[in-house]
Amino acid sequence: MRRAAGKARVGAALLLALVLAGCGMAPQKPPASTLVMPPAWRTPVVGPESKVERDWWRAFDDPALDALVRKALEHNADLRTARSRLQEYRARVIVAQSAQRPELNANLSPSKSRLIGPFGTPIQIAAITGGVTASYEVDLSGALAATTAAARFDYQTQQAAADAAALSVAATVASGYLNLRGLDAQLVVAHDTLISRQRSFDLARRQFEVGYSSRLELAQAEAELHTAAGVVPQLEQAIGEQENALSVLVGDNPGPVARGRTLSELNAPSIAPGLPSELLRRRPDIAQAEQAVAAADANLAAARDKLLPSLSLNASYGMYAYSLKQLVQEPFQLWSIGASVLAPLFNGGRLRAQADIAASLRDRAVFAYESVVRNAFAETENSLDAIERLGDQLREAQARQLVQAEVLRVAHKRYANGYASYLEELDAQRNLFSAQINVLQLRQNLLAAHVNLYRALGGGWTPGRAKDSEGNRAP
Image 1: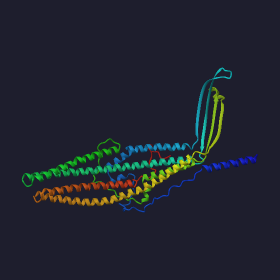
Image 2: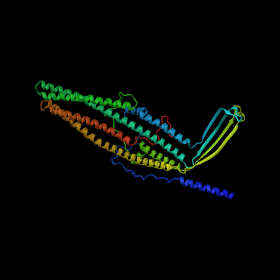
Image 3: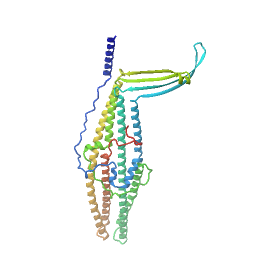
């Protein structure tokens, strides 16, 4: 008998080993990385060494800009949606964790029925059944733990996505505000130019009335006056549209936007980007892609583990009685306890195919991560180069503006004294207006390039700092 029992145990062990060997699946290795970290930036470092702060927009030292960005971070619809999505993924983690814990249920079922008795006479039976059932799945293969880990990584991915959305909104508000202040500055120049054109027209009319100039010069002065007048409503329309866009972005109805410093008073902050490797810790979209890889890898592990046997423990205890009094005093007690092992033997290759799908998704997450990192390098390089080149262009444009102002002064004096035609002054006026607008646009673009650099450097956001709308972190 003992020898037979021993053989039975050995046979069961061999059978279990065969089942485990047949169900197992070799790990699928991730693709080889093709990402090469550059040792330094192509463009020389801009400004002194300083840390990129989370509230980077305050470096522009404009209270109105600070108020707009903070309002957008609180009321922007996209950010509110992202925070709501965090609540969903937090609940997903709790759902995944619950599968690793025992499940306990209670039931109470009163019933009354009319049946035909053994002698053909109808009888009525009243019964009350109550009980408690418990079940627990032993995570032998680790599939449940891998599923929970994947849910946590998904939650952290959404945290990083919320940070990326906040960075994008802050940068968009800052860029929009700078564009608004640039349009305001251009409107001031347009009004000043209109006043100058009115003086030129008045002078041309006096010259014509006394016979010092021709009707052609008078007509040219009038045409230039109308041209300058037409620029004003064009800029006012652009200002109104930019105000409406900013209002909607911060969660308000379209309307006027409070201003702070003028474009010339806004100073471009000097920052140093540090080393390229620091982007991996700064940019929330890189953190998002990294967490996506981790989640895909955990899902792959869970898919492979589903090929292994699972063990479930079940227990129940119940009471049966024909009346409530009997249920309380002398019920019939019912109980059961047991376990079940489920081993996938044949499913048409479905589980292996699902593992292959998970491996493909993991590989694509790795490729996407590398693409995000390379794009981050390119955005930073472009922003650094733009700051350097726009600075050079702005200096040349400012020098040109000074020269054109002097040309107009001389041309106006020559025309007023009758030494030159109005065409000479007209050309000088046009060139000066073009130079002034060019300086304003370049200054605005230079400030916007700093915003883009802050965006490219991650804006001070670090992985895992986001919270959902209730202030919760990942469970």
